[in-house]
Length: 554
Ligand code: ATP
Ligand code: MG
Ligand code: MG
Image (cartoon, rainbow, N blue to C red; front, side, top):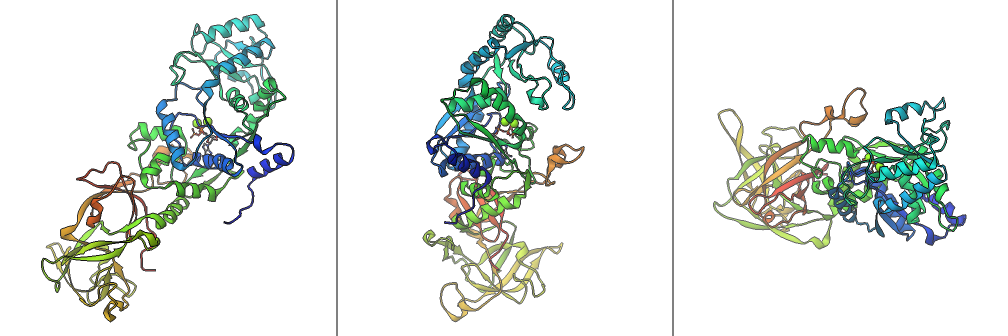
């Protein structure tokens, strides 16, 4: 296998191993907030953390960062677990920040006793105003010097739900003049009278992210806590909180940052994806147009294609926009190896072979997948009347048109060579039938001289009397703009592509009667398609994963 050089995250770990960490101390985590479904941006973080776990044979915890009952739900917990498993990763422990509420609370009480935290009874607006600006020191809260006793009493009331939401918060007493705004007495707890998906109504106070995250890492003895770059200024606070609780005999976690990955022609933010769901722009979190893992799965993406994509973009220190074509490239690569080839005509026109016997059906052999020797062969019916794609025929064409024209020959895939003879048109001049003749000696694979004759084009086709009509959902990009959420003075919703879905009827070879949800196919010369869960025995539904760039005519 190909050795790639270490990325900067691996360099950090290698340095630590040189400077005294033992391999057995390494531990990583992936910490989603269960407030939505995982998206392709999360896949980068998942592949990074779980990839490190595999590389260093170290545990990786799945930690739900569930500290905001207003936005979190069990449905999202379940979806996150399903998606990580589907990607092929196994977590060492399923953890919840909410499991640490008691420990966090006990520490917070100790903070109060040590004079390092106080209850502030101002509104969040007042607190924000007093923080000042980065160049000027903030103003101390009038409650900053409350006595320990009063703080303990008020904090107890907050905990017991005896105060209204917003009446008080608990703040760490750090430095109102720090050049890092996050160090200006950050809020540790707020009161929320909401039902939590795991702790129910047990807790009325909920810890803030900064207070929770590092301490959770510490409790789990995570060695390296990798997060996205926007948390770089939080690192000082992460360390400050750890300083207060850290026991020297234990491992001290460190936060390090890597760049967020953005994908073009979509949005990777749960909040924005939720808006698409709530406003009915898509049918749900797993709509095949969504950049969620669940949406990509339903669209026909494979775990390997997503992992290969994440590996190929790697980890970086600078945020960038990855073109969606890169993701599409990876799924084509993977499905090219795995997907069975079938013939389906999506925009049919009738082709009549005038010299072929009436009423006859011939069963022809064709390969399931030329990229996979083990995939075998199957039989497809051939008859006098076929469908071909409308755009595979032109009455008159120049020499670069390698499809069917009058007076020229093409091969019908795995069948015969046919020659265009005449057309039948309706009153408006639209072609309703193409008449052709076939060369009976030219059957594919027969080894005859006629069968070996070189013709420029090969077309896919289906026998009309044997064809299975199927529903085909032709998906396109959800947004018309490469970066819809960074356009000046414009909301990302303005760039929703009104033509991101077209539903058509295709005509498939009859082998597609026997299919299961999630089966992948290459509709030859058209693209990769997957069987949708909306399929029934009467109505097969396919989602277009991605069109094929190349036809057989290479
Ligand atoms: P969102 O804005 O979509 O809610 P988030 O960062 O708030 O994203 P979390 O559930 O907190 O979502 O994310 C879990 C982990 O995934 C975090 O470590 C976060 O940094 C990482 N992550 C989220 N989005 C991306 C992205 N686009 N690229 C790389 N990592 C990401
Ligand atoms: Mg987050
Ligand atoms: Mg978020």
